[in-house]
Image (cartoon, rainbow, N blue to C red):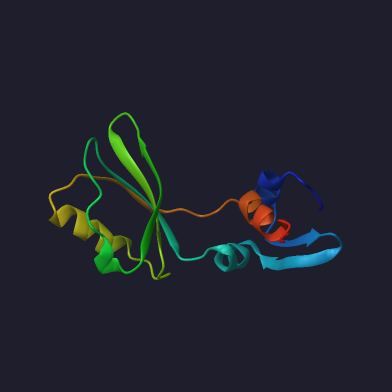
Length: 123
């Protein structure tokens, strides 16, 4: 099965190969491709409306990639340098500071993001 519609590939295939300019850029099962691409742990953290992100330096190097305000929630997309799943500790940390924990989950890149990363022209 060959397709440029990567959302369909992600739904239909267990094993994929990404080819660019006649060369194999990646090959393996979808989980392995996702794991190799992800640099660090990306977490979506939602707090109560108007709440500020607490100091997360105790979790090591962390970068805030995005912040948005939804109807009842402040959402932050955070990248942690360590790849260990810290959701439990992060949830406890937020609650211990009296903040409302609305959302807490790992974000995975879509196959299209991975494809674009692997095939971008480097200077």
